[in-house]
Image (tube, one colour):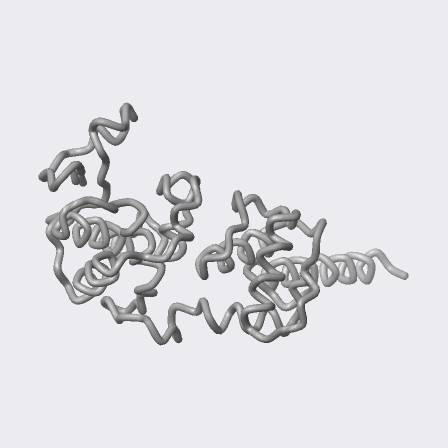
Length: 227
């Protein structure tokens, strides 16, 4: 075989591997099971957590907590309960977490917002805050969708590493309060008491220099809202 043929053959193989890695960059259809790891597992964990199934840290490692979450998801949705994320499980998970098809969604600009997930975050982050403050917290998340510095879906914003303490401590998985649901819907309808804020924090609970350095807009309840 000539060098030219070897070079062409090698190039074709590299291209095939690159295309394969791109195809599986998000949640693909290959079987995921205990011991699997990588970006597909991270996406699996994120979607399970989005639906309220605790998976622990979104670390891309299919461990016992992720397996338990998969089994519970399968049980709740009439699937074979084997703890394996196969084609049927992944297809159903995609269907329920697709922001473009969710029945509970609300169109904001060109994005369809998962109201339930937004409400869960509001409930976890602003429980006990004035209703206006809860709407403002929801608005902050929606404001980030419009900003190119942030991810462009509610799920990716909420599950961005270290973005919200409620994800780290598991509070995001609790059912939302009625006021949080109402606040999420109001924000999705265009209300923004935060006046365009991209961040919020409780001054009594944070010493983070970066968040304190942001231009402050106003305070509602215990939260300061900043750009």
